[in-house]
Image (cartoon, rainbow, N blue to C red; front, top):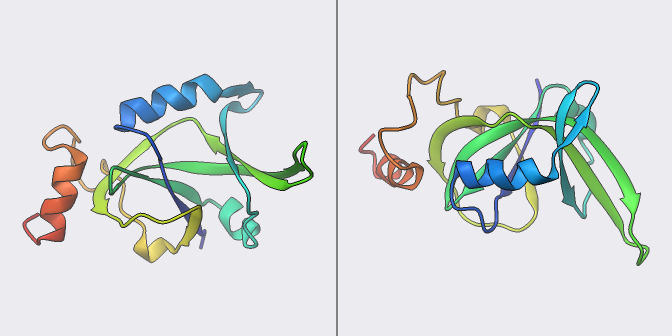
Length: 142
């Protein structure tokens, strides 16, 4: 079973803004469009992530979307510090909005804790803003 990552989308207003920001960094390859995501730490369980895992994005306090992780590469910057580049699929898949507290960096996310895709859950995504839906869900009203 694949393992997922979860990361805050710092400074991002909504999914359209996330797509816009990522679109500027996207790289076209023979296999499709890949968006690089840079982080300091290399996931030790990279093989599990590459076996079909995704990165889930927390936008304004709610898990709002996911993208498949296609590659994990490492490098060293000009100052001699190591870093990791996650190559993710450019396609954003909206998820059922789920409240999540802030954290630094990224975390592993077990498949059982990952929010379902919005389309799979029967939602269209335009009824309520994600942050309101997450708050109502946390109160047990949705």
